[in-house]
Amino acid sequence: MNRKKIAVIFGTRPEAIKMAPVIKELEKHTDQFETQVIVTAQHREMLDQVLKVFDIHPHYDLNVMERNQTLSDITMKVLKGLENIFIEDKPDMVLVHGDTTTSFAAALAAYYQQIPIGHVEAGLRTYDKYFPFPEEANRQLIDNLADLFFVPTELTKQNLIKENKPENQIFVTGNTAIDAIAFTRKLEMEHPVLDKMTSDKKWILLTMHRRENQGEPMKQVFQAVKQIVEEHPEVAIIMPVHLSPSVQASVKEMLNGHDRILLTQPLEVDVFHKVISKAHIVLTDSGGLQEEAPAFDIPVLVLRDKTERPEGLEAGTLKVIGSDKNSVYRAVDELLTEQETYNGMALAENPYGDGTASKEIVVKINKFFSKK
Ligand code: UD1
Ligand code: UDP
Image (cartoon, rainbow, N blue to C red; front, side, top):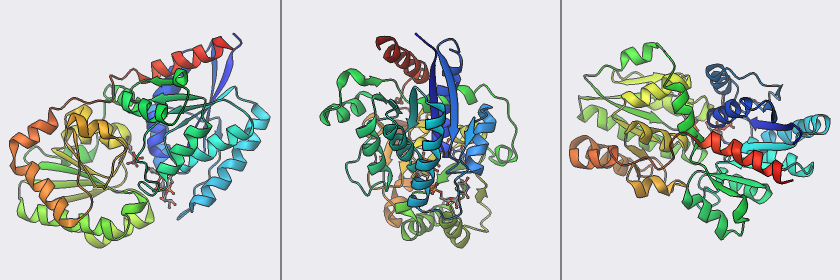
């Protein structure tokens, strides 16, 4: 087999974290693959933080981010920017991840050049195109263009089979988020935030950023959080605040200035993983955190009405609690006061694999080319 050129494309923080282990694995096989890293920089600072931790140096950087960018802005710039690169460089395969607008536009650009597409973290679904928005549509669109489907679990495989995707091109690999944790666990680190998370407090790690939660739902959650802190002197909150201007504005209006609410900049992923491990509860609308926190035996309360990660619900590691002030308050209060409920969630088994997903993915890519 000739050496194949694999273009790995991503643009946001979570894609970077979950693609980094795949890049590292591809780079171990220089006899078979030439790995080309292309970043769109849909995120700028939050992407660069990840590149630094994993020591990844992109071959191309489209640098598309603008403050308050619209979905169309991102789509158009990525589509056009990648067209030029694909025509010039002719990769043999494009790898995209998950459900961001970068990933959808990259898959479309690859399809237009008739380049095979591998979709990492394929098959997740809520089947409601506005929850989460626009990610549910993005991932369904990507799966309609993809050639290889790397799914994290058996359940996600079944979603694709129901949609008549070819079963022999669907591979259950586990989630590469767990591979990323295996990498960051080995790193030595110091950070003032870790020093501030003293063990005399029960720390609740809070993150929120989803478009459908911005504005009123986010404010309801913040009211509940303030009530919890006021009624539970043993509790402290840590919230690394997403750089989205809408999130920044709501946090500034509602959470500033409380001595047991620690607001920070987005943290480097190695430090952030350590923060998860020191938390008592994770309260989040993030996708990635629903997979990561159970790997540290930390219960996750999901600030959404629906999740595309039902495996976590089934295993008992997650609870979907929405964003209504009263339901958020009740769910957090229950975990703080009911030890049995807490233990049931904390000790449930993480359904997202054992940290070998990237290895599996690279084996399957190799097989795809050897069959040709
Ligand atoms: C995007 C993804 C979402 C993913 C999230 C991870 C889409 C449509 N959404 O949402 O699926 O869960 O990333 O965080 O693809 N900003 C900065 N610096 C940064 C990053 C963001 O200033 O490093 C600000 C910019 O003003 C930008 C805004 O945040 O306009 C929103 O970024 P965007 O990528 O459009 O949406 P996210 O909410 O981050
Ligand atoms: N993360 C990080 N620093 C932070 C907050 C989160 O490195 O300050 C990591 C986290 O470990 C997870 C990913 O970012 O891997 C989740 O990203 P985000 O919540 O922005 O997006 P989502 O997972 O919802 O798509």
